[in-house]
Image (cartoon, rainbow over all chains, first blue to last red; front, side):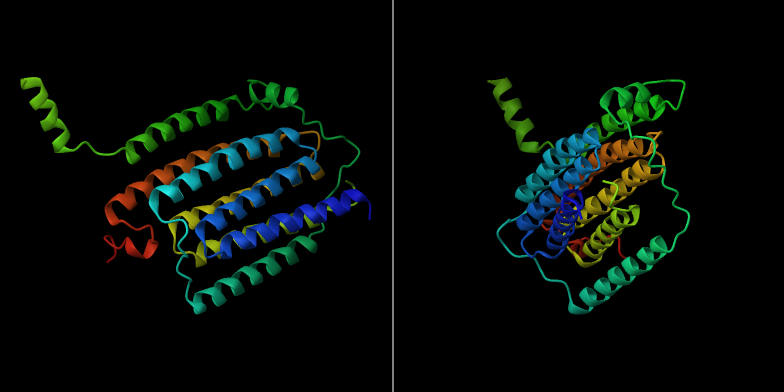
Length: 183
Length: 104
C-alpha cells in the first residue's frame, strides 16, 4: 500500500462521489459544479497514469470549455436558484436497480476474464513529440485522415450552432431601417 | 503504479458509466441529461487510456481515440446546447416532457 495506491483510491473516490452528486442534485447549478469536480478528478487520474498531454487537453476542453458552456446555457434558459422537479419514486428505484445490476454484471465479467496479458516491461512513451509526429504522419500508423475529418466536423459544428441559436430577424427592425432611410 | 491492477481502473470507469446512465434515465431537464452523457463519454476515455497503458504500451492508439472522443464530445455538446436554446425560445421550458409536438 504505497502512496501511489492511496492517491489512486482518493482520486477514484472524488470521481465517483462527484459523479453521484452531479446526477442526484436537485439544484441545477450545483449539479454543474459537481460535474466540474468529477472532470477535474478524471484529469487527476490521467496525471496519475502519466499521460500528461491528455490530462491537459481534458482540463482545457472539458473543464474550461464544456462546463463553462453548460453554465452559460443554465443562465440563458432558466432560474438557476430554483429547485428542479424530483423524478417519480418508481423511476428512481428502477433506474438505481438497473445501474447497480449493470455495474455488478460488467464488473463480474471483467474480474473473471483471463485474457489480460500485462506487458509491463516496455515503458509507455506518451510525450507530445511522439503524439504530434504520429498524428500528422501519413505512413506508419498515421492519424492524419481522422485529424482532417475532425477539423471539418468542428467547422461544421461551429457554423451549425451559430445558425441554430441565432435570434431570428424581426419585422420591426426592417421597418425602422426603412423609415430612417426615407428621412 | 504497478500495484494497481487493470481491473480496478476498469471498475472506476464501469461505475462512472452506470452513474451517467442513472442520470440519463432519471433526469427530466435537458441540460442535466447532457451532463450525464458527458460522464458516460469520460468513462469510455478512461477505459481507452487504461487499456493502452497496461496492455499495449508500445502503441498509442488508445490515446488517439481519447483525443478524438474529447474533440467530438465538445462539438456535440455545443450543438446540443444550441438546440436546447432554440427549444427554450419556442416552448419557454427545457423540460423534456414538455416537447410533445411529434408525439403520436
